[in-house]
Length: 346
Image 1 (cartoon, rainbow, N blue to C red):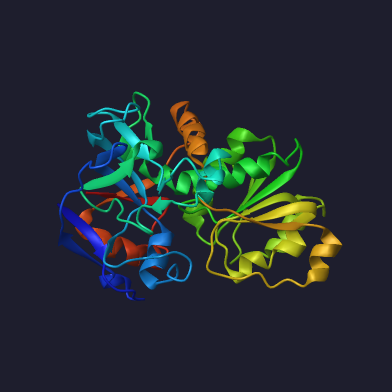
Image 2: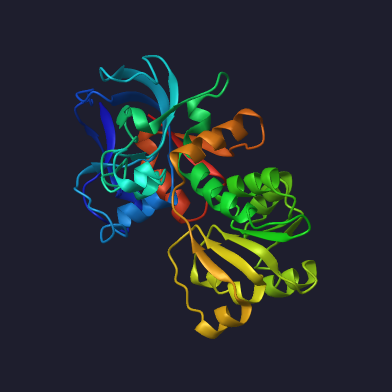
């Protein structure tokens, strides 16, 4: 089968991955599931993996097939698999978990002590077929197509995971801010609108992204290139600040907004990454706000997100590309030329 593989780390996105012929995975384990990939979302994390940014955090044996947002059709299962059968459409949680360690027993699947992460620590879905496990697949409801939902396998549940935490601390009349209405942000904004009664302000440098935000429920939009974010939000919130800030950019400039735009006792959720937090301790003490880290959501949260998709509360803004166009997609994303989410169709 064909697969887009990373052989060495590079900052040059024009030739980050190569299309190789590799053996098709087989179901050799009792709980194995082999999926014919119909859609695989491209993520900013894929660019970071190509750059080697994840090497110091997780073990990576190269060459490796990238792609951690996968959906498709089951073509083979291990002898003990009962959740799905051949021919079933599924979305695949990117993490394959053991189910027996303490974090798994507590339902914290992202903290599994024996996990394998498709496209990050083991081969992913930028290929014709994907090896995963029964614990990682979710059958899709009738009418939900794999190619249309694939990016929710990471972008969707990462955004949902952060929004779910934020919503628990939002009351009617509160203000929430979404920074970055891109691949994750446009999903997070919709989840926030569907799950809370907060007033939402979207912040983005691209007018096309702000137009998308208004269509997805934002009450206010701010372009930092044309207006001062701090001053604008001060006016929007009557000087109180936002109870919850969802930062889907995570660069130095956006984390620096926190002391000035986050309400007392509020949270600045960091979902995007690449920058740093450089705030004096006194700023946190004075405002008693928190920086909150977010990683990929749990398996159960992907089930919940699929339910939101099925009932029409969350839509995906996507563009499609062939497997041979992976480097083109990486370069486009690097230059901010993709609205919403890019989907590879192996």
